[in-house]
Length: 220
Image (cartoon, rainbow, N blue to C red; front, side, top):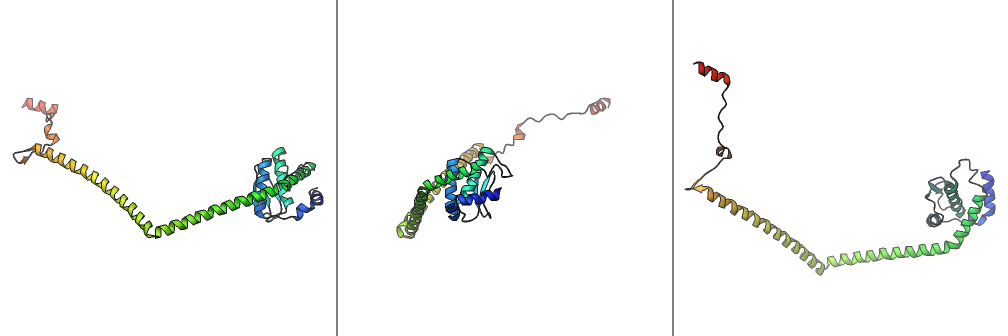
């Protein structure tokens, strides 16, 4: 049944099967059709013939326009009615009607899509060219004397900032040194530095005596 449907399909749409489009144009048309009919399939190239499953549409490189439309109609069918491996629900009159409607939709909008894609490509090219020109201007400015002077001034500012931070740290260290020197002078008496150990300041507890030793001492 599929072979009969394919032969009938070629009789109904001969121009679309003869018209081959590039991979970029196929990707453009697929994205526009996908956004209009709201299915979630992805597109890949490199398959021998057209193929569509629940997740992706596979096409050969530089496919005929009819291949793209045929598989996109299958994607719409799978979205509405599910997936059937036998193909009996796929190649029906509904599929042919969907193909006719999609061909009309593509023919009515392909000129606008192509012009829009060309305009977007031109904007991307101009944006890249502007970035390239700015990079060249910046490189030439850095190589000039004025650019080197500004770079050295930035380095000078950074070095001064580091020096200020180091001076503030140095001031803190010197304040601590003065504080501990003052404390040392307070603890010095008669030129002798009194070293106070924390353990010496605590009272010494009495040594515990074993009861047996106490008993022997009483007997003696």
